[in-house]
Length: 376
Ligand code: OSB
Ligand code: MG
Image (cartoon, rainbow, N blue to C red; front, side, top):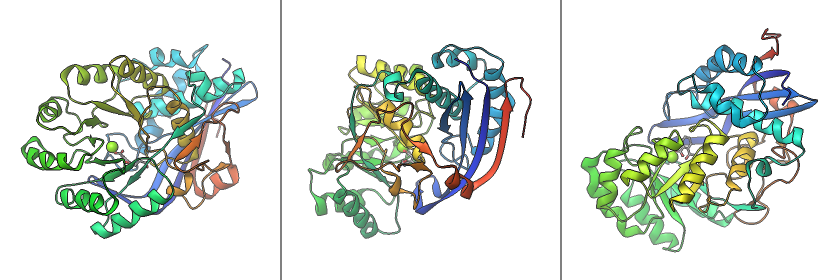
């Protein structure tokens, strides 16, 4: 593949309304768009790190630093023939998965565009549509969550994910079941807010027949999760704890989870996501695609990976209007039918980037050329 230059654009985009989790609030998405040019085509991806190191240790600032200092120079001094080769190229650099994934994703889009195929096809995805769900944040009251659940159910979302934290869990889930019944595909995400000492809460949650409980315990744990899974019937799904196919293998071996949430950024890119997908498929562990409050660029990447066959559970890739008054892609990501997104068939990610809209939120911009010099 011919890669000539890379551009970073940092944006700050306000959310329609604040999104609260057990680790904190998000009201602005501070992120980076990576554009890679070659052979007259441009590949795009966005970094999913948050402004503060609340979900993981990475931030928009660390991603920018890692990209400009190490990852982009490495890419521009190498000659790769396919995106899979980035895995070895970046291996000497420890962790910083979201930074790696942002660059790798843009290379994948460029690769697909240079080949004249969709990103989904480049990854081996066969589905033409995907079923999607929605993630609902913590609200000041149970009633306010119920209003959101009602709103998103009316849009046809096929999975409702509810954020919980100690003191805002059993009563909340019970109220949702009471109001909307047991046929609603419902799950809870704790974002590491509990410890093994609180096993009784999870035993009580078992009665609500949740599809799964996501990351109840520490962000870096797979041992206590295995102990918890032995004591409860609700399947545990791991998010924060899984950073690679090797992590997934160990968690499966220990019995730490029965389901895995794959986030492209958290695991270092599309190639690693595919490896986790394949490993889980071979072990009868279903997967679904998580979200990081992405704009349409990141959503397009999520849609493409979800077209692989073992993504059998609806993910968190909701439509653009879930978080944005106006997205920066055209067309916006829209449900084609209730709870369904079409997998684009045009080249690459299948969405155009609207630079006029990008400019409205632009904070800084930097370009890098093949001879390694910063040009602007
Ligand atoms: O734990 O899945 C999570 C958002 C930011 C950080 C972590 C998580 C989330 C979400 C929202 O649940 C997913 C989305 O709608 O993009
Ligand atoms: Mg999660």
